[in-house]
Amino acid sequence: MKNTVVTMQLQKNSKDKITMLTAYDYSTAKLMDESGIEAILVGDSLGMVMLGYEDTLSVTMEDMIHHSKAVARGAKQAMIVTDLPFMSYQISVPDALFNAGRLIKEGRTHAVKLEGGEEVCPQIKAITQAAIPVMGHLGLTPQSVNAFGGFKVQGRDETAARKIIQSALAVEAAGAFAVVLECVPALLAALITQLLSIPTIGIGAGAGCDGQVLVYQDMLGIYNGVLPKFSKQFSPVGEQMKAGFSQYIQETKTSAFPAAEHTFRIDDDIITKLHNEFI
Ligand code: KIV
Image (cartoon, rainbow, N blue to C red):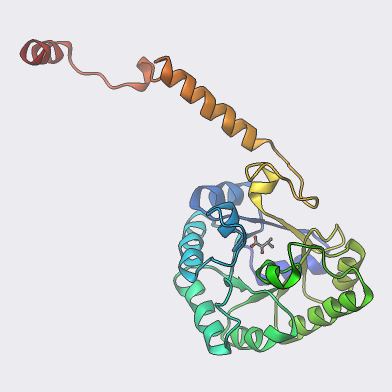
């Protein structure tokens, strides 16, 4: 069954946890889709895990469209959500609408995600009125890394916790179909999940959310070797990749690779004739 905004809402209603992972390319999206993942996020985290930037701020619309298209070709059942990158929606509502439209038309995504609370509600309203589903993103919003002074847990004191609750209610009222809660205390995320009628997707927000999302390089151990506290390595793929690369290097150096079964044959008479002529 194809996953959509409707099936995601049904999952919240029936307390069936929503599974989401990031993906940025065709092959990974295809593997995830075949594994049964329900939603794929083409996150602007691609700036860090795919392009090697130190934060997400340099990611462009062209980057997001390029990776979104690749994921859309690989995923057949999963619902795809693509991030609006930094400064593609903050400046004005027309900008936000135009860029959300590009992600749908050119990126072939099903929904867009943007970061922020009340200040981006006019954008959420305008985009949803154009029939483009919007996922909100609250708590640690990485595009605000400079304002936060680093990648830090949000909503720990009462004022900050109240602000996140108000933002979640505002984002829902503006028309968002779901909201990501990133790096907020687990009990605060559980409270917001109870308050909202739309699904919450947590990352570093505890098991009380309606679903979870992880950056796939983190959960497979293939990014930087540093696992964030809230993530979990489900498979040591990074180590397996390194072992494979080392074995390839060793077998190539010793000519163990390529072996006979990896090569193509030519008729003996032809090669003898060519030898006699050229060597
Ligand atoms: O860009 C991203 O991968 C995200 C997740 C961390 C939620 O926004």
